[in-house]
Image 1: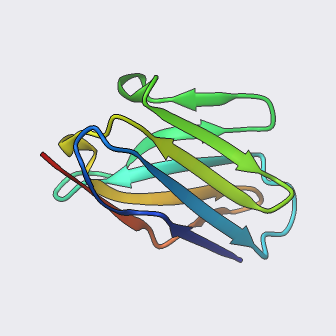
Image 2: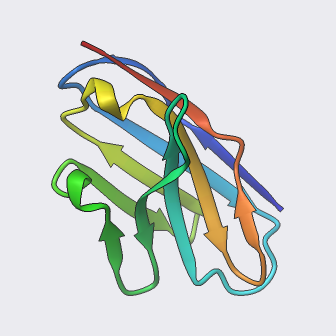
Image 3: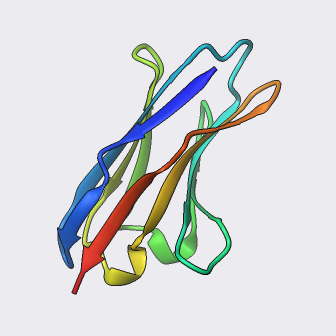
Length: 112
């Protein structure tokens, strides 16, 4: 099984990025996928989740971030708009099926 994130980078405050997570080799049904992030010196925190029927966001990120999934192409997305310096973190893709799977992360840096 493999989850590979991409799309991170350096962006100015107010800018946008779209993260992608290409996943493969996961057996069984994936009932939920999510994006997490971990800033330096902080714990990993949930950003957004998506199931077959619903999405869920951390309250502080609602309206700026959008999670979506292309099940045919096996790609999870995170559209991030109006980025702030406090959004700087490593962003991780997560898949929950018979096991929990993680990608290696992609760095997002937002400059002020």
